[in-house]
Length: 216
Image 1 (cartoon, rainbow, N blue to C red):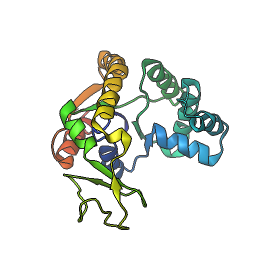
Image 2: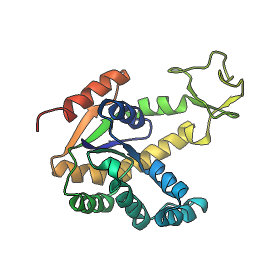
Image 3: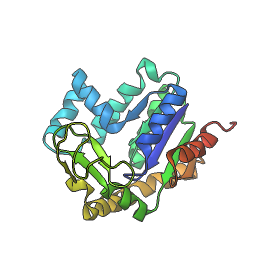
Image 4: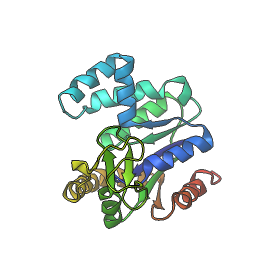
């Protein structure tokens, strides 16, 4: 199974990728994770990425694509993978096509998890983080036992700046602007499926399974 998950911040890509990984024993590759892994392993591309990351700059396509090519050619991806956060632009999608041709394979599905903006804002703005241990909570979906106090270490909880409503709406605006072209690109190729991302996580998972397990 070779699947690309697409969705706005807060759409639940990470949660659904974890469920798919457990179901199919398939590696989950998120752009942030594989870059950090390349940095930790000290690969040449990892060191190039680190220079940009340490200076607060976006990692350029040339480095990002190189790191992705390196990761997808590893042995655990031979029988499948879940992509999350890459590609985000049409040039990145074209580069991914080149990598897949090298591997003599293709994507089985591109799945967009669609959630209305107001629901995304509610999900993200309700998140709270422990200042001491970094544990995550949600005011409505996973609240702490004592308001404002971490269950694990009794540290104080706070709202990260990027979880404030104004910041969230800016992030969603950027996502909408930059992601539309790639949705049109995969849509024109007939590989895009839009999944309703509202509901219990198991309901959403079943919707995704209906797509990835459908007969070719």
